Length: 79
Picture 1 (cartoon, rainbow, N blue to C red):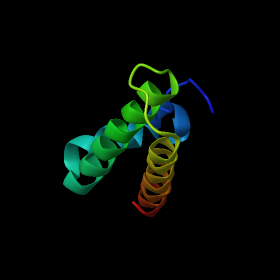
Picture 2: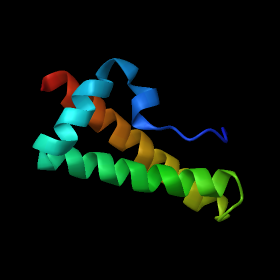
Picture 3: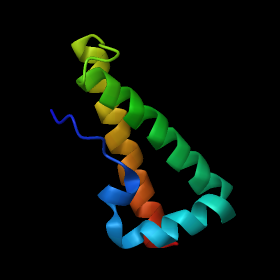
Picture 4: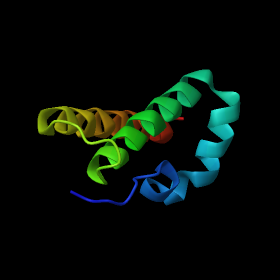
């Protein structure tokens, strides 16, 4: 478990410019990024005990964040 937020620009530094452009020009990508940001924030607040959650709920959030991250990466590679 890490207390460091997993921001998309840090996760995919080679795609930082492309992500910025897609957030403005592509509604689907903007939604993926917003969903990732929302879940990532929930994971981070749970991990830092700002908003603690039951362990299974926290694990579920991490799984959802990982799935979104995979989807975002695939989208970046394809577009």
